[in-house]
Length: 276
Image 1 (cartoon, rainbow, N blue to C red):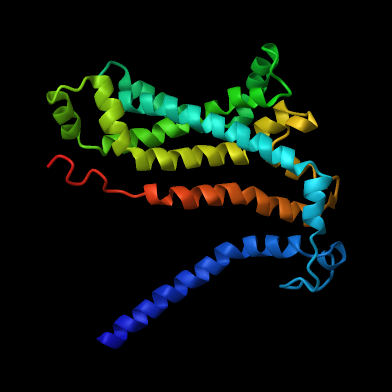
Image 2: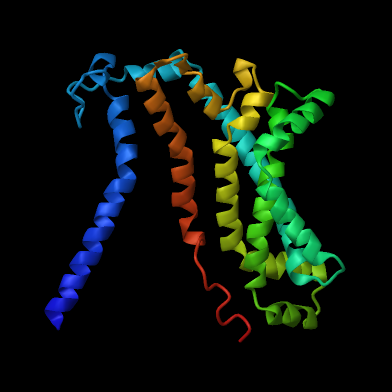
């Protein structure tokens, strides 16, 4: 019986290890390629380790490609849009999940449909709007457009999370003399901190990786985001593989760091025993 249990564990962990290798191999190959020289990248026989480590790809990114400006623009846009999206979304999600009013179901479904609307359908009218108010070819135009993606998504995520918070906690706070607003800010939102943290990360990732709207709105080099900076490394059928792979590695670092620092908040069960 014990041998069967050990064999089952070996099978499970072996399968997980294989899946992990399969998932991480593209990241390893990007890192491996970024440290190769141009000649080694185009060898007929690929190598799984650079024969000679070369930093030329990263030097080109940081000195010639203007990649630092792309990173700064993406961080600026993504952080501001994510904070604003969470602020508006948690208020909307609280109203939909905790308050009773006419049309609540219609509004909830409307938010979902707004998120599911294809971006390829919306980018023309959104560009016309941004152009009409003079924000085309600017990262401020992106700040105006990106909430159309992040707010519906964040609201839909937070509605289900707020619904999981027992109503008795809110009722107990109001019985103790808290107003609706104080209960919302002092009780419900702190309990929803894991959901808010997870939703913020997803909203940040949506902005960080967005390409279509940025391509349509921004053409000025100084205002291009990180996705546009990476696409500019492809000229016709010529691919700058070294800088492209190095840029992809650098682009993944902020999201990874954010996941590492906020992973402790992404837990469940904070409200277990809260009523008692």
